[in-house]
Image 1 (cartoon, rainbow, N blue to C red):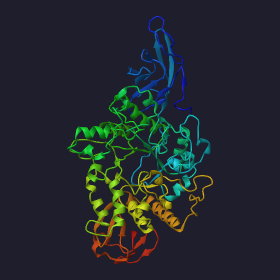
Image 2: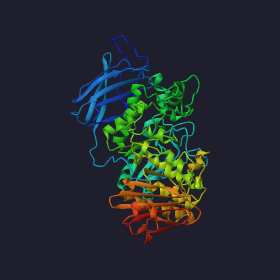
Image 3: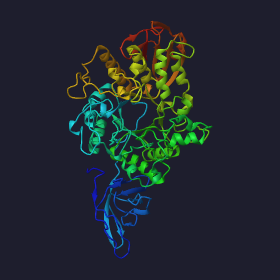
Image 4: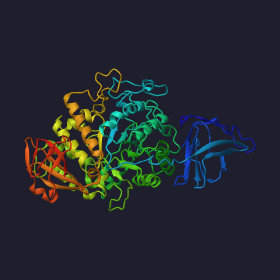
Length: 621
């Protein structure tokens, strides 16, 4: 397929003779037609098409079309005459084909051929994600360089400078594709990639969150076609793909910023004004208007202009862009960045539009708020006093993330140590569905979990055990399995290159035989745990029953039908012999257990030895 943003040659009007209107600017191409194509068979029949030329007046053109099942509803001119918007109705009776759109100015006309494709009917192409999955988060620039030819390319402000911590290092889609077997063997069932769309910025944006083209994969990662290849290969390997998107802001080098259709597509202030980053105030019943404006309209960064989703044309553009990527690429879900920052009513409309069209599709919003109640506000079905309904199935569970290392690092007490995990889960009544929460121990913006627990391998394994056996959709960050560490006080420290991802690396840790003894132990532990979890519905959706921690020992059960898993977490520096009489309401009739990690059989459940700083995961028989 040709590049979506390639210039598309057409014949255009140069002068208007009989009308008396003279165009001072002429054009021989449209620079942009977005979306470049669409599909018949969509549930929502309305289609908005943007036409753009950087040096031509499109405002005077009359537009018409004649195609069975397709109706031109409206032609919309905007402040900037370089743009023209069309709204079409693509009815259920429309067939795939080429719609000839006639543009007329005076006596001269030209035709643009717009393609309508058949919507895919392939079974299980778009799967969504849920608590049966384990998500593996990858920063593409820092994972593996599979194609050195795309490291530095003409037309981009920045090439590859691996020696610079904030520079691009050359990781790409092929590097991920080349290591899918490694990822699958860990027991992972879904990939979440930090944004792969074009970030052609003067300032470093290897992270992908300053997008400059919403319809194009960054060529330094690969092409749209290579992205499709990675997704299809992942699906064939039994793994899903979650695309990272941003609705709150775009890069300041984006063409929609450089030559905006209307001034209000971007929030402007007399001088640079940042957001106050107070996501919790959106649900605050006493919030001030001034604080609200700063939160929603302030810029996330000097190079990330804040998008105005209340503009109806831009709102439709953004919704269609998400729908386009779902249908075009067959992605299984979207992780939406900075979810509380955009206009919340637009975000509710966006989520509904996507799940109405694709009911099985997965959506998770980044809600970085250290409060259960303020996080639950954003989940679909929340009984909010202001009546807000987000339509968002899943939220990121930062309270989970913050609670785990504190619980492991503290001595046990009334509200410290492992009691924190008990208290964490006891607040789940505030979520409409806590099992839909995305749970994690760290990510690309946070200090690595291994460092957070003092590089203590025993605590590390306890945290992973809790993550993989508690409720929710667990996510692990690339390199967790080899004990990568780093302090988030400097972002590059938590975004280091995966050893072995580049030719000439001193070590290749993609090879499961390589690594220090601790790295080998950690990877073997995670591999055993994840592959066991993969086939355990009792963990995916079983009921949780937990008991108040005693002497910093926390016990909880997962039950589903006749299946039962018992988890015993000993947060102490000494072995504990657990008397199980207290748990008889669940242990009644159970006579023995198998240790999931070691395969050891425990012949009697009367008293169970739990080593120091260990989480025993026991399948009860």
